[in-house]
Length: 140
Length: 95
Image (tube, rainbow over all chains, first blue to last red; front, side, top):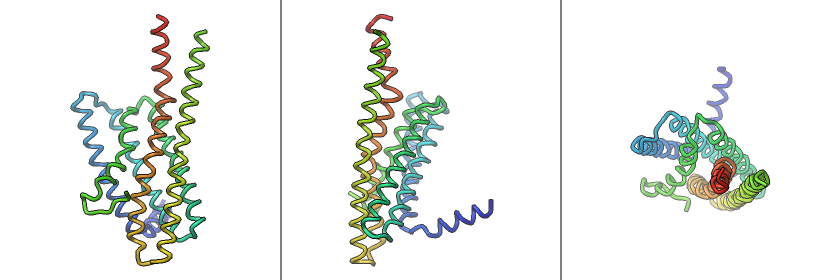
């Protein structure tokens, strides 16, 4: 257990500061927007535990997706152009597969509300669009 | 006859989901090109690595959303649409 923790600490120490900063920003934005979504479900009287579970599943998946994308980009920058492009394409396909599994789980299991799983998938896009308002750069 | 109609509905939903997922290829190609150009830019100006990484991460997040749209459409076609369409068929037939 302690060896695994050490490995995680070593991996996190090698993560680029920009990747950490942007992942934290996306995580914070997803958290705030998730809270807003829960309130909307509560106000509309559609809230139950499935909404919370679906939101948690999806929010964790999108944050993990962004962090993995950041790690891939960081590692790709040390490679030559062709290898970098191939690595990012492969990573994107694998991450899309991961998201498919997560959303399929959310749709197939009754303990998750499907809409609470689907809606948070778009929170990072909204967070990126709002980034210039918080003094950051945008990718657009 | 009813079984055939339900089979056609399920088949068309599966075909639609598969076709929608073609859109998942685009973001991969786009992100790959962006990273390749970023490598080139960092090779020319190594001091701009931090700024390029930040901008590219945000760009990749935007590009990836199109793949997620396709994913959502595919999931809805697989898990939600067949039930609704079969219900409509049953109501039309009065069963």
